[in-house]
Image (cartoon, rainbow, N blue to C red; front, side):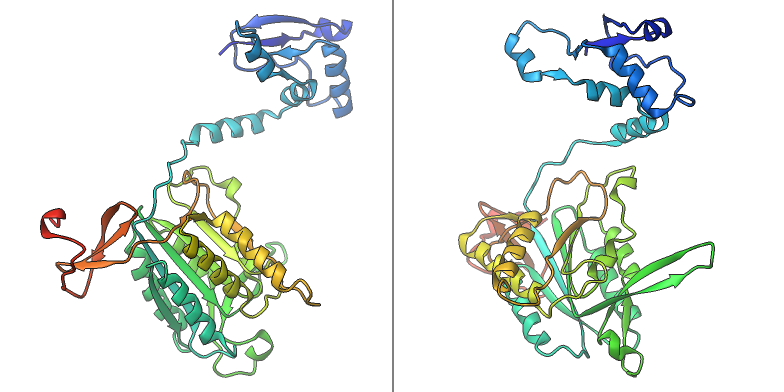
Length: 385
């Protein structure tokens, strides 16, 4: 790759002139100027004076239209390149070297859904909402189970369920976690000089009743998150609770040096220290998914979020207290371009194994407890070895 570059010397800086040369190089020749002692406004003045009316253009090609399409590098871009900090430049180089091409999208052959709910809660109508969500997911032929979190030994029992759930994962599987209930956060202080840390949690009771209620149970989200992040599959988590945004406070995707081949996405019903309406996200999610199922098309999580927020806005447009808009977060750098939800064909059981058809092909999805045969698959048409 060739390009025009500027060579600026101390003498040219003093005279206020510059010459351009055609060098086989990838970057501009840096200015010979003491950046540690020169004030910032002086740096801009020297560079602008040196550049004058000289434009930095790409190497000319035979095609005139190609030159017009590529355009010319502006003076502002040249100045930013010349003023870049060496440490920042090295950091960007490391990030570029670690980037791998995005993996092409392929439809999932299996989608496993776990709906989390506290068995004892003070939410009227929560059971009906959960059943509505379950029926909606099952209409997509997803594997759906409801996990009821108990009051006693809540986390040890839930941990066993989630470890078993995330263990059975592969690149062709989407693992879906949906939680509806109470949520909150508490601040843990590490000393006067160590600062503090915010810990989000899931709860079965409202925060105003937790202190004086003997049957209060809590699950720290910081315990659940490592299990989800360690799964060898794409995961999508939906938190329909208050202060759901606290689960993203410790996440900084820009600090992840190495991308992973799996996409870890999170949809939250409320931001940090924000109150969520009871069931507004679950209702909008079901409405959005049903419209997809009726029209039989695929939808990414970003588009799904847009539909959810549009439904929430239209439903509560005339309400005095409007619920918050949902948010979408990526929890780790990834090479996977997107998570796409699609409707699977109806499952069929043959020779003790469950098969799932997606458009024009059938794929093995796992073992089934039933050993019945169906007419949809013939013994000679499938290889079960």
